[in-house]
Image 1 (cartoon, one colour):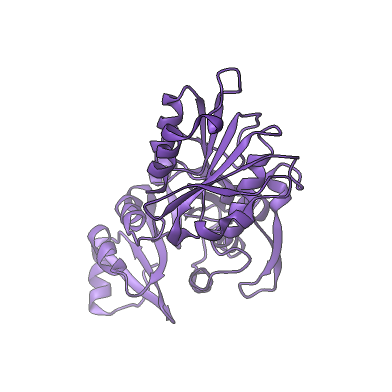
Image 2 (image 1 turned 90 degrees about the vertical axis):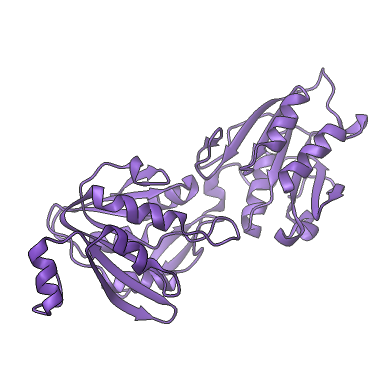
Length: 352
């Protein structure tokens, strides 16, 4: 709803708020997956550039927005307050003094208190439109923002430990499990099988890379890790944390080439606020086509989710490996018929 409200402001804003033809009629839209605002700006004569950290149709996806200057910048309020501060700094670095920076979002996303995220060097942020539980805030740049422009200015490092001692780990605003090791990921790391020498590992929804790093450390000689994620900023962190891994920007397995001996995943189950199993369903459906013969999918998720039922649709050998708190780990493979028969007879507990 926030993007249509912002688009309504573009179409109805008073003359004093409307850039004149002699002005820089370019606009940068940051982190807005919906098309309404960009369309309204284009209809008003702007040349619009759209950027998003997440892979999205019709948008530039990169770890950092393109350089300016732009005539105005629009920022869709993200969930993370630190990310909101980061994006508003980036916005202020992409306009000249006097140009407007806009922030828009819904009431239940925190837009009512979001004026505090504007950086020093901007005037007081004012609500220029309040409608349908959404707000559009605007402020004019008066001076350059205090931080240097670039993602590196927002790097933080924190120790993470999955059992063999703490190590410095790189995080950026808005990444999953910022500043910590997620307990579901830690549980899956405890269960990871050893990858054969020269084997290939795929980390689906890799985030900052802890699963790939742990799998590489526990593998044989010379394993290869591919880290797949739709978030360019997460992959920038993974480049620091798993420098030997190959990073691929993508949402599904069509973006990578198999075969893989092991696929590991703590898959995302939310699309914004609502829960969604779309990523899990796609992973389970496509994984058998990129696994090597005898290869396994190792996945962790909340036990209340029907992951075992989904796995059973694509794999004939599904095992529950671990339970801890609300989380469960499953291993799945496409086993030979004789392996399935032996497992059913209880002749062994683990498929090799």
